[in-house]
Image 1 (spheres, helix red, strand yellow):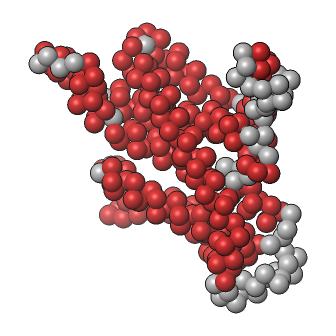
Image 2: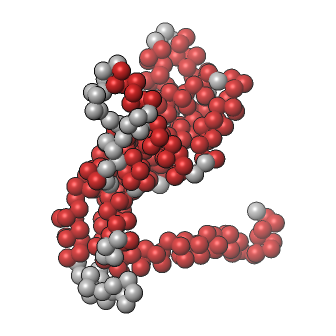
Image 3: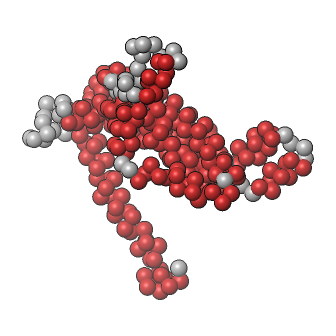
Length: 287
């Protein structure tokens, strides 16, 4: 830091923040301003000739009144997927942090291995796995869990499973980071005080891992709510999420004002939920 101060003087901190601030201004603030402006424009325009900014607040009421089922469905699917990721991810992160031993690095590499392929390819793989004539459906039909005409693809189950699979690493990594920091001597001390395994977990491990739980659930829930690829490839028209409707309004209907209004509504809703969740969890320092 002293060397930086010699080069940049007393304003070294501002020079260091400058590139990131410029990046945010160009790629976040300006697009956000454009989105807000479009959401208040007259829908009578077109993408070619532009939309007139008329402060038309009715766009928000019309978007919310017509597309609220997509918002509810997105929040429900993302919530279930986040809960599944938390259960699965916590068990795996705990095993890596405390039980993996010399296999810890290998298991961490396996966790991030799906990132070596694209999001689209991973989702298409699930489409093949859950296909009507695939081995999963045939097996479930053979053991009478599914009826003869039963299917998994194009159902809410397929969409939620796709979300869970694709966003599971985003849950595991923050959980592992929190669990790995826990001093094993704390649980040993609890055991010396005759705490049962469940008490050691509920009184020592779980409270100390809360920052990882909050970070993981946010990293999973937020992108899962706005996702549209899983619903497009694994779902049906009845399982479409709000991301699908926004994409259709922008690309198919060319209704930019209502698409922008729906995007702003989704963003405000998520921010409000995140603030409430973080405050309730007592982890405001994560923001």
